[in-house]
Every structure is written in structure tokens, then in C-alpha cells.
Image (tube, rainbow, N blue to C red; front, side, top):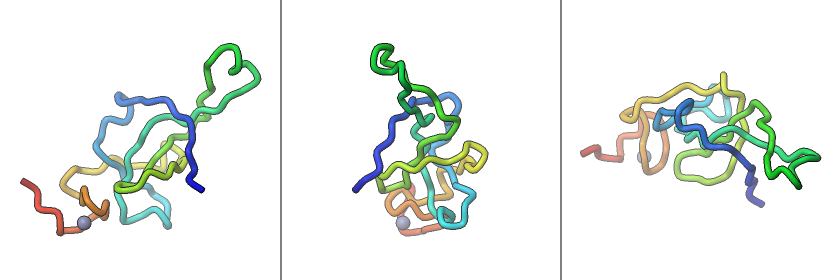
Length: 97
Ligand SMILES: [Zn+2]
């Protein structure tokens, strides 16, 4: 089962193309930051609003499974530093034009 989470876009805060995640299992791959994780509370049913949890929702480049990380665990990545096809940092198989 895929993990889909609700989130609020924030392209101003997360303006980089991609990020690295400073966690052992997530290293070596580029990640996109989608926005702030949100969760419904008891008011959501009538307000339509969800609350930010303080964490951010990220997906691996080339994948669409949502993971929640702490904002301080991600670092902006130069576009040249990762592969847009397989998402690996330092992969050379994508020819940049
Ligand atoms: Zn590649």
C-alpha cells in the first residue's frame, strides 16, 4: 500500500529543485519536497482546514511514495548534482543539455 499524506504546498520555503535527506537510509538519492505535512483535527470536518504537523512531505525522485521528514533533515541540492531519471546523486547517465 502506498503512503499518501496530506500536505500544503510551500514553494517559497522549498524553492530548490531537489534536496538530500540527512538520514542514513535516505542518503545518496535526490528528494523533492512537496510541502508541509497536514493532519485533520476535530474541526476539519466543518472548517475544511488541516493543521501543519511541523514536518514536511517528500518523495524520492522517480517515485511517488510520501515520506514525512523534519525540515532540518533536508538540504537543498544543486540541479547538476543529481540524476533526473533515476534520482541518484552523482549518477552520470543523464546527459544534461
Ligand atoms: Zn541516473
